[in-house]
Image 1 (cartoon, one colour):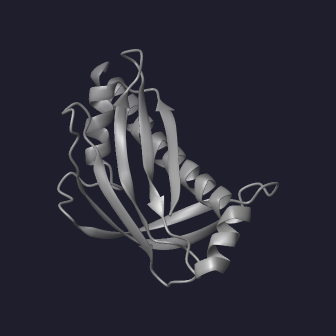
Image 2 (image 1 turned 90 degrees about the vertical axis):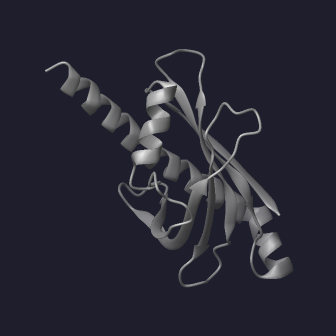
Length: 159
């Protein structure tokens, strides 16, 4: 099993970021095991605007935090059309940051590289970097959506 752990800092208070994560299209509030499609992307280095993509079937459901503080979402995805993309099991969580104005969006979990020993070798050489970059891009997009929705909500309050 290969481990994946990425985080992105958000310009959004913790409580509001938790609400927005629950409301966002990528993680519906009433998920309860609902399945949906997600298009994962990987930017192509050195080629402006170019990216590789893969559709995955995603299941998202509320998780539990043993400390009772954070609100993790259990996340599972598997490729729609197979191929060399692995299944992933993990959590997506908003965590408090050191200031009231910011929070952290965190993705962590594990995947088993497909194709046995050849897949494990590919993962050691390149696949792990691809997985981490894909996770970073997912958090960039999801975090950007949360921040934009927060800014829009704050602007609406001021008018």
